Image 1 (cartoon, chains in turn purple, blue):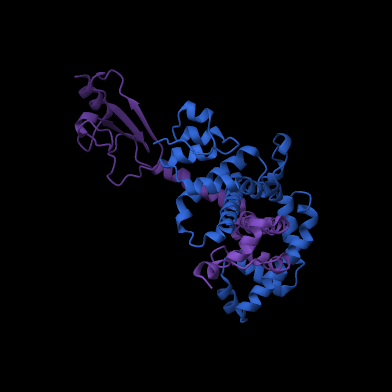
Image 2 (image 1 turned 30 degrees about the horizontal axis):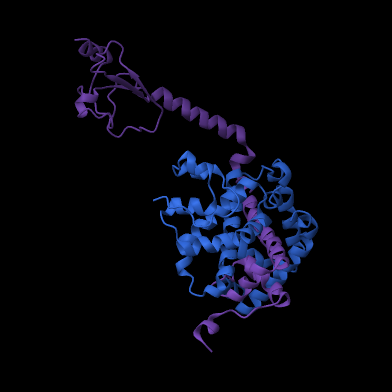
Length: 175
Length: 215
């Protein structure tokens, strides 16, 4: 027997292939593992049809797994049985935190949470050739001079002393 | 770079992918499978092109078992064509190349349906509401994945014998291979495969009434 003949898959019939189609849909059998099955599938419309149905069932099983994850019941605990007291407590803590938060003019600490909402505006009256920007974040303000960071506005860097006053900043800009 | 095909096959390709790859308007107007492939890879690759020319009809029929939208069929056929061009030299047994092509086409369809499933997102969307696309009508794979049908699959799964159901659940839900399932249940790998085969066959038989008219 020649090498090519030894490698050539023996032709199979539908009765031999059909019982194995669930394992093909399962992914346990592929063309590399069993080329004869796939050679038959490439030629047989009935077995292709049967395999497609198995595949759709498998996709439905996979989708059912996803649906179970998405429709899992919410975690239960004391806060679920008494939602409104928990909500009231949370709101109270938030309000207290806002009241105790540093007022305007306080220096922006180096470890400030920059993930809170940030607003950047162009300083009114600044030189169009040398624009400056005010960055407002978490109740703090910074005036940024892009040219003070080598012309790249990539990393906000205050150009004023750590303790700054907005009015003083505006005066410096206006000079 | 753009070597013309020696024997352009029939049929046209969806222009979107050509545009994405920067094809000229002239190329797009006359695009066929082998022309596009030649454009993308910059070489004729006569053997692969000849193979695709010969098998194009069969490959499209395989794709149409899972997807019926014409544009999607074209896109998937193009994906398969590119894979053939890239990987044909890895096929050692050329007598088995048709089976390899079938597997490529089937895998492309299954990957597409899974992507569509993820893209269309939450369990609250009903994929079966996809509008029919012209005379080719509904998309069997997409319709089957509607919530109603997924629920039918789960009900059918519940009706299976415990031994078959638990094997399928371990395979699908926990994505264990057959060896791991055998170890978990304390049975042989062969027993796992027998239960999987019987369970899946029973599910298909129960659900044939739902998917029977779809294919």
